[in-house]
Image (cartoon, protein in one colour):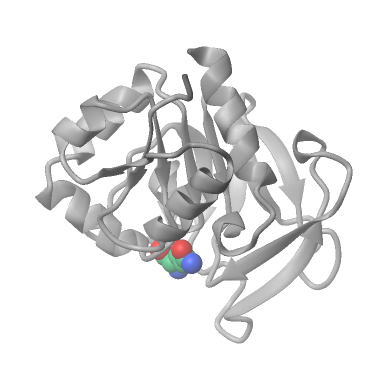
Amino acid sequence: MRPAIGVLALQGDFREHVHALQRCGIDNPVLVRTPRDLASVQAVIVPGGESTAISKLAVAFEVLEPMRQRIAAGMPVYGSCAGMIMLANNILDARSEQTSFGGLDISVRRNAFGRQVDSFEADLHAPAWGEDALKAVFIRAPWVESHGPDVEVLARVESGPHEGAVVAVAQNHVMATSFHPELTTDDRVHSYFIHTVENRA
Ligand code: GLN
């Protein structure tokens, strides 16, 4: 039995995550929009999009608190881009009303790469995902500006003006990337996450 994995489907590129999961053999990912949807899954992916909108909708759809509780109780969760922001315990350059699910002991800076470089691609190497470079797509991406001792850095930008910027992290059952593996056909980040879920089950 493959695990029941949900994708938070309030806003953003949740369909692309669903397709990536399906390519990895998770036939029926659950679109999570209500506390009831959330109760039916073992793990959740928080998509890229606009973290201010996801935050607002999470309150409106009453999934903010249930997500916080499930994450605190050990539910595996992975967030890409806006999803990373939603999993950060602290957001820099947040909108005043913006809140997060938390789970990662990180300070994340929104739109950190600046407006001139709205989006870019970079080759990253992360032992967690194997030897080959991963082509990472960044779109108005955040970075991890600082993190606590229990956070594992999985990948950094490897060259250019932002060399060294932390763009992938994990802390126990919580993982996040500044970039969007769901927008490529390299599914190693998703399969890594699925393995994490299966190992915890
Ligand atoms: N800049 C967006 C935010 O603050 C994130 C962008 C993205 O998910 N591609 O939420």
